[in-house]
Length: 150
Length: 103
Image 1 (cartoon, rainbow over the protein chains, first blue to last red):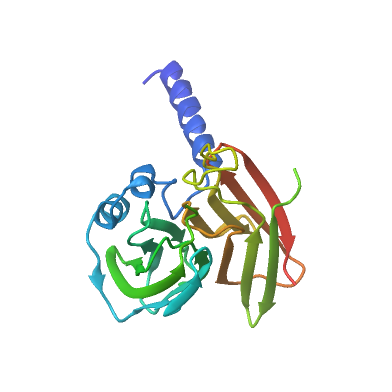
Image 2: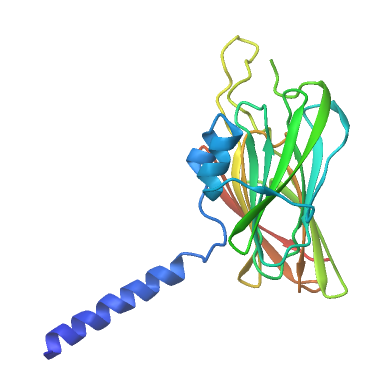
């Protein structure tokens, strides 16, 4: 190796390090277009986590039994599983079932609340990815007035 | 750009609970306006909260999230007076960064 190649290599690695520093390390992938635009829950789940989820009692999904207003349905997802990396909320019969995906870095509690829109009475599913596996919990929420306009 | 997030963060017992709400319509692109034309989709698609340079929460949102999105989570660490930084982006490409103090 002569001097020239050494200098080049150092410059290249420096550029790489710079690039790595510029890109914040993210626990969650960028906005997953395929998953968010999928029209069916199975497709969305597949695109997001690449596998079907196993029902688990360690995933706690809090949602009302009856939501009067489908435009604002409070949903909380909590999990006692260790090493939770990511959590997602699906509303089965919405035009695009995947409502949200949350990245849970180490140190952050696997307990997230948000509010979703529901077009009609359907199942709400919480999916938790922990230690490379996916787990889910489902609950039916009855909607009196749909929340997707129309 | 004016702030769109209202953040309430409180530190207690070594943990910080964050409740945040954005002022945003979250237009789905499926709804029709008064003129009968579809209102184009315009919604927040990513929200990322960091504390002391470390990302503590990330959310990828879809149009199924209610108008004025509400998010709540808890992370370990954080103390009164410290700052949280909230970075968001819209499907239209608009982005913003805001800061909020932990109380």
